[in-house]
Length: 388
Ligand SMILES: [Zn+2]
Image 1 (tube, protein in one colour):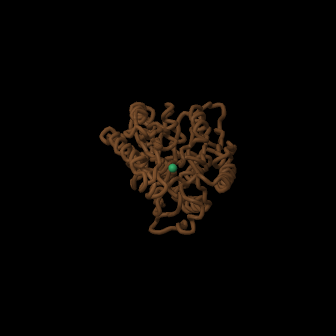
Image 2 (cartoon, helix red, strand yellow):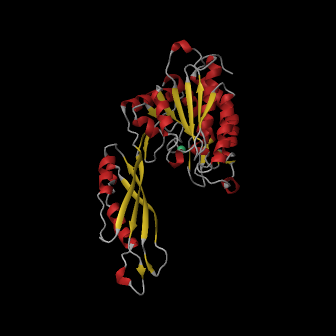
Image 3 (cartoon, rainbow, N blue to C red):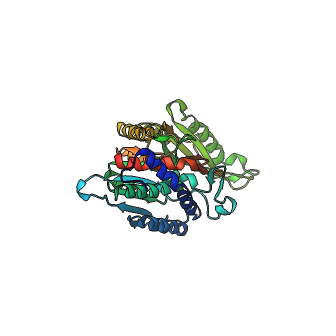
């Protein structure tokens, strides 16, 4: 173990020596399945994590929810309570998109210096990085240089409905937010901008009729929906970063019935907060082409964009300086996916996202992290906890 306040090189060596233990921990996390929609499974993961963080001196506390796993907050006091430094918030989620039983067909395993498994990149490696960065800081400084709040939510993959308010209120008490979502790309860039994300549901009620006996009497909800989808697809404005994707359609009952009902679920993405209003106005202005059909529009933007504010840019600058100490040219990226970082940046708290594992295939069968990237990412996180 290095002396107190080791050099950056010593810190890197410290984490290189920890690499195998870190991989074992990530593996343990991956092997406890925790889909967003399975409360008992997610709660099991939450309890396991609470114990691990408690072992390093954290004070765990659950925020109970009915529909998802209980959200887990862990507070770490700073070593010197008189120094009155604001905490830094480490934000993550322990839910995954994989249904229970996925491990059977997608086991956690190591090949070609990568660790594979459901949720390994998004974002169980990020949670393990938090744990090891905290442990390292404690051993280098005999205590944490400032208070740290860890918040691990259980419903990030399904919109964070139960955790959002808590995330925002913890962020308001913090100097900065570090989000342990996966890094962008194989070079491990941090994320300084994210698109805003939302969903719309269009439902058409038509008039049913027998397709053979009374074809003229029906007003097809499916036909109406098809025309609405064509109208909605014109909302796309890729140049300005607005995209609209009708991703799921449902409707009708049988081929010989003029359909009485049909719906489409639409994913929308925006680059700037102000685009939310104009896009919403367009959705609300949709009217049926067939006057006998009724159209309802539900939904809206769920996560506003994470914009690259001066606060975000300043955090990235700090991260770059830390990386430079070990000759790492840390890049930044703007991405299309949203995270809880959108919430914290949206209320004006400096947020740096993509601080977690580096790899590929989030939400896909080839999801993996690059093991050799772990030490420097842990070093970056520890450094940012000190300086953010
Ligand atoms: Zn994630």
